[in-house]
Length: 260
Image (cartoon, rainbow, N blue to C red; front, top):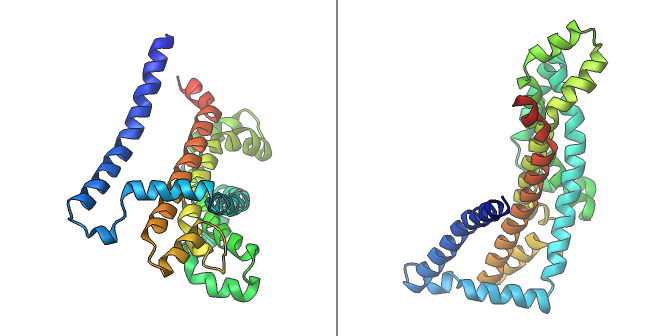
């Protein structure tokens, strides 16, 4: 049994690693064959060297920590606000009809378009950057939440009412457990949106952070640093999403047992 488990872990790790190895190989091949001007495409080894130099002698660690701190702040505040709003909109249909157009209106606005207003009202400090990430995560999460609630089969509510449950009991004992997977999906979606919005958020006079690092490097046409920043953002987003995915599997494992 242990051998089978170990083989499964190795196979899973290989399947995860192979696409990235292939991508790096294609990157190196495009540069070495001259299909793309080597002056416009840094080599993977050069980016790795810059990564190591940034970890040991530069400020890469500080940039990573600042970006992670901002993403987590925007994510947690945004989803904490989105979950109750999602419950409210999903539970009461009149509220849904009233608020749904408003939510979709603001969801369609790109956060980068709001930067001038954010600077006017909130200044250029950390609050402004977190506010942009909050905006992005809130509207991404609230859509997932109330769509998830709306998709729950009414049979559960009818059965609970037949057994004499009140609306409050139905909400806490039926709806909340059934929406736990949707909460976790909302968190994952909001996480991806936060990382995608990070560079825009750090346009607000950020001196540190991966987005600021990319912007500063673009001013000097430092392609190595630009690639490094992009890879760091993708790697951190993937790492955090993997943690959330495994947490989700543990938290909703009871549903698989009930279904079986």
